[in-house]
Amino acid sequence: MAEATDAKRPGARKLIAIVEDDPGLNSMFRDMLECVGDWNLRFFNDGQEAKDCLPELGAHLILLDVGLPNLDGASLYKILKGHSKTKDTPIIMITGSHDWELHRMGLQSGLLLRKPFYMHELMSFISALLPDTREASQ
Image (tube, rainbow, N blue to C red; front, side, top):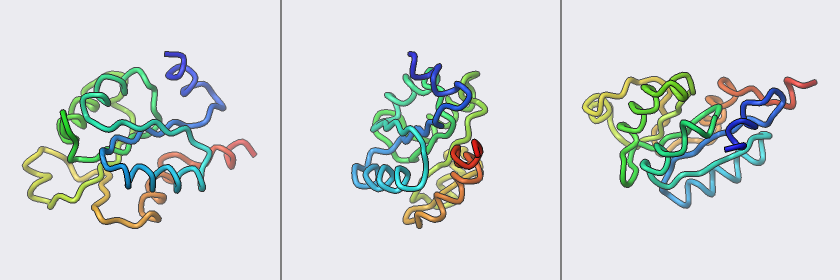
């Protein structure tokens, strides 16, 4: 569990947790995020694994797909927002769902990326929520 403690240490690289079951998207996230920022990345392929690990991980930001195996993203979102260790962690929801489906799942609009999306949309969200740590230290 040293990883969770280290993630919140001042000056440490920010940690982004990515909860997505599509290997192609995960590869795209890794390639793009490693090119443009100095972040640690942690990937989860299903909702249950993420639910079990995220509270202790200490992530600064969570990218969360709605359609996940074992525990859907909408349920995981509610669990994370209700947990004392993750309630203040920004979550960007990623979905191909329509507004009525999101409403039915009980999700507020908040930070939402609709598939398909452009990487610059994702980077705009991340830049607003996690300013580049290299710029902050200069």
